[in-house]
Image (cartoon, rainbow, N blue to C red; front, side):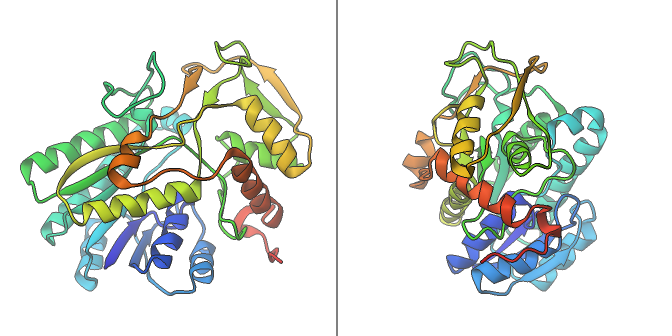
Length: 342
């Protein structure tokens, strides 16, 4: 079975490609390197011990997508490609709406043209907006508080309409919580451009001395220690969730949303303390004001994915931190590093 992976050199995409290859799937990888590095391709091949087809292409260019489908027998698509920074989306919303939505429309149009109806979509827990309850389950009313989240919600609505129009479609909407960690080899990990937006890459860069201290936004939330609580999930567990979703969409039709999280809420201080133990380094931090729009607590109810996909996260917070630290030490400058893992 041949799987097209859009955005396959990104953080989650690259880990999923390794798992797909290891599980015996053939893959066709598409990326435009807007938020990733070409070196990732060689590292995927190195870890998986298998070759695959790669196209440097952009979903905004429909002719490029058509060409890929003409040259390859595609059985299903895992769609990661998209702009993904919440803060940036507020600054340049038109870019986010154009890139994420138009790219998806082009992809789905070409899939229909070639009779390919199996799709796993990379959505986000941001589609839950601000809720007054936890854990979050798939049947809650949806909303979004920023342009990035709204693109994910709009695409979910588009895909629902697509299934209504043609019941040949089989679609899994995977709502991620907070992906962290890295491949256990230390060869794949999160390599953000500039100052990291996410907590764990920021902590790892503080631990290794690239950044002076961590800013903790608020310590007066109604949580156990006053800091924000989130559901962190190891990227390898998350990748396995895509394999399970792929297996389901290739044997059924319909459209279903699934939370991919641990179901456990960890506070910012939990993360700092656990990472400090895993790395043997102190993590200097400073409490500052809450950020507008941040909520105190968010974690998943992942029971639907366990029941319908036979998937459950396995790795604990310490493993997430150990693997994040191994990646950072072996790749202090991300994929630009020339350090060899021993």
